[in-house]
Length: 121
Image 1 (spheres, rainbow, N blue to C red):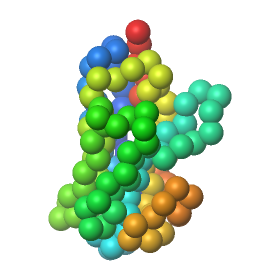
Image 2: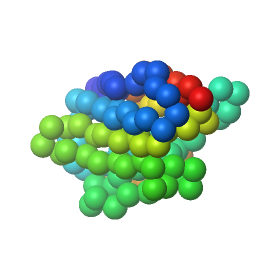
Image 3: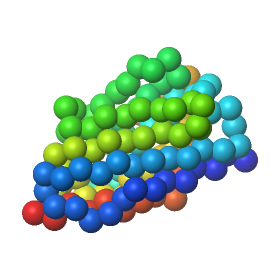
Image 4: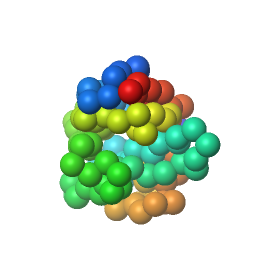
């Protein structure tokens, strides 16, 4: 059974940084794409960043240049470095495992429990 556990959320002021971590277990971590989704208040869950098993990355336009996704296959861990945070980044952030080596939006089959990120103005 695949398990994903996020950590690193919290309350910060606009302009500050946070780093989220996702620890994975129960599958061969290096095979699949991994991604970070978020669900903002009143909005649907959206893919904000993904990293494929070959290292290629994807970012939603709203976070390009501010967020950086990475993975450490030796530690079965994925990270999301979030810089220059804005109030509109406030959301629950979810770690997700892709069903393919290079999953696109909608191709994620396992989810963590989520971690709250709140950015005050």
